[in-house]
Image 1: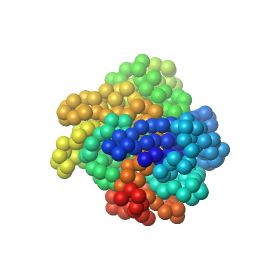
Image 2 (image 1 turned 60 degrees about the vertical axis):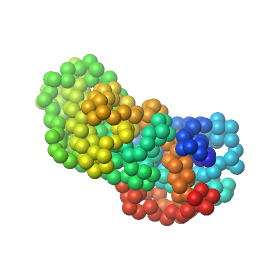
Image 3 (image 1 turned 90 degrees about the vertical axis):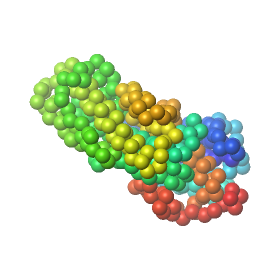
Length: 357
């Protein structure tokens, strides 16, 4: 089957066409992503109104480019998928409404995909990872450890109590006068800094549960910066290195707890999967390899262009759901908030598509 996927939940306007074979393997036929980083850089973060307007201006062209690159017309599609949340509601509305229009006019099934589910299932597209696996999802808006047991069966093992990891990196960059997006800037500065200079806290370290908390770390960093102000270039590098090392230590400790909880409830995971832009950080990636070695399980990290927001992950999630006959009616609503583990408990207005039963 072939599905068009649309992603507009934050500051990437994306569309892709993905094919799923009968044996469950996926093939990306096109994957077009337009970043809005330049539009938001001056503000030090994503401005929802600007993001929504940019999606409106670009989405039709991005979809046309994705279809052209796949060398297909709409009659070849078996379904149309769009991220229906969670995300910035203006952008979500743009993408979902466009998908509804295509599905209605072309008489194709509509699949309203949870953005987090799309991230969760990407490892099955890239590596054919079997269930059940332990997902570490870390981005600018989300930080979760999830047991991915089957399509639509997700159990949240741990989550952040305040800031997401990517959000903490962005706020740190802004505090220290670095550019946006903040993650790569902090990582670059950390590479030339002394990670032992500042004794920053490791929140939640050693707790049995697998939750995260980063607001205290961010506050401690701010207090250190204020204490030694004005900051030299080396001060900034040392603060970044100390902050990044604290995050790395927290990630390792929280994932150890998460894998222990997973194994106790569901047995050993088939893999530890990392998704989201934070996994691009090399220090965090090294600690993920360390964890996988410790627990004796493969580490799966999709390529960066599939780990950050993109249309292929949405199209693939649409394929996975469509293969089970799960589609949505045209009155499905966009959602700013949509916890991943709600999918298993309340699937919303789903209907079985006879052709795919």
